[in-house]
Length: 543
Image 1 (cartoon, rainbow, N blue to C red):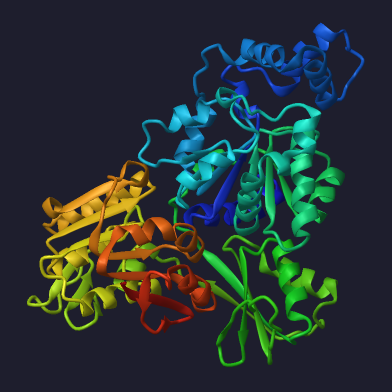
Image 2: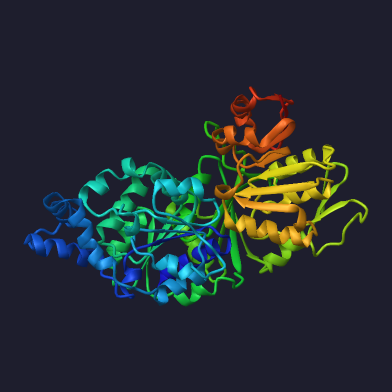
C-alpha cells in the first residue's frame, strides 16, 4: 500500500459508510466484458475514412458523422453494441460497494444488468427527460447517453454542445460532484474524456469541490501524481479493492486539536485536508461547533480551535512536523492529540433514537424502544429505505398538523409519501382511507412494509406518480417534498383537494414560503405560515 493509498483509503471508506461516495465509472470497467474501448470504437471510423494519421478521436467521429450522416454513424456504432455482453467481476465489485451514486461515461447497460436483481436500486438517468421521474435516492447517471436512446456523446459537436444538449443532466452532475467524495475508476490519466471532466470540475468549483480520487493500476510518476494532487485529485496506484469491499469495518481514529485565529483557521483546515485529514471542524473556545455561513454571510469566529480527524494508523508526529514546516503555526504551537473511541455507530445511533410526540395524541416509536403511552396513537416506524422518521423539522410540522385535524372518516393523500409516515399517522388518527403517491419504487416498498407493521395496510393504497388514478381527490392532502416541486406541481396538487378540503405543505425553507404561498393563494384560504428551525409549513382550506 503506497502512502497516497494509505491516506486516501480512510476517507473513501468513510464516504462509503456515510453514503456520500460517488463512483465515476469509465470504459475500462467494461473492457473485461469484451466490449471494445473508446479508441477501438473510433478506430472503426478511422479505418473506413482512411484517416489513420488523425489522432483526435472526437474529430474522427465528427468526420465520419459529417461524411455519412446520422443513420450510417449509428449503424456503425451498433455493430459494437448489438452484441451480447455480460457484467464482469468489476461490475460485481461495484454492486458490493453500493456507492451513493454512480456516474458513467459508458453507453452500455452492464451496470444496469448487474443491479437488475439487487436490493439496492438506482434511478437510471441517461437523458434530461429521465430526471423528473427519478428521486434523490440513488442515481446511475449515464452522462454520455445510452446507445438504446441514440443520444450518445462521442463526436466533437457532442462535447462542445454538451451543456446545451443536456442542461438538466449537466446541472445534476455538477451538484452531485460538489456535494460528494468522487472516486474515478476505469479511466487512464491520459484519457481525454476524464481530462475534460476534470477540467469541468476545476473550472466550475475551483477549490470549493470536495477532494476527488483517481484509482489506477498503471504506473504513474510522482511528478504526475503531484500535478493532479495540486489540482484536487489524489491518484491512487495499487490495489485496495479488497479493503474497500469490506466497507462495514469499524474505523478507529485519531484527532489533532489546535488553537488558531479566525484568519488562519481556514488555511490550516485546507492544509490538514491536503495531508490526509478525513474531516476538519471548527470549534470556538466554548466547544461550540461553528458551521458554514449562509450565502452572503460573513464568518464570525472568535478564538477558534481547528480539529482534524485522521485514520488511527497515521503517524501524528509527521502531521505535527508538516504543520510546523508549513509555517501556518509556530514551532511551539499548542495542540492536543487524542484517540477516538471505536464505537458501533449503528448501536450508538439506535441508543439515541427515542420515541417522539407530535401534537397531543401522536407518537412515533422505534421498534426497539418501549412505547411510552400505550393508550396514545402510536406509529411504529424504524428508519429504512426511504426518508421520514419524524426527526426532520418538516416531517414534525406535518405530523403536528395532522394531529390537530379531525380525520375521522376522511380520505387523506400523502403526496411524496417516502416512508409512508404521514399516511400511516393519518390512518391511526382516524382517517378512513389513505393514498400514498411517490415517484420512487423504494418509497412504495418502504410504505408498504411500514403500513403492514402498523396494521393499516388494508386501508392504504400506494401508487407511483405515473400510475396514479385520474380524477383522484381527498378531504386532506399533505405534501412534504421541496419548494421547487411544490410550485411546479401546484396545478396537480390543487386538483387533488376536494372543495373545502385541507392542504398541508412542507419541505420549504422559511425564505421560500412567500413564493410557495403565491402558487396556492388563488385556490386556498391560507393560514399563517408556521416555522420550525428555518423550515416552515403552509396550510389552508380550499375555496
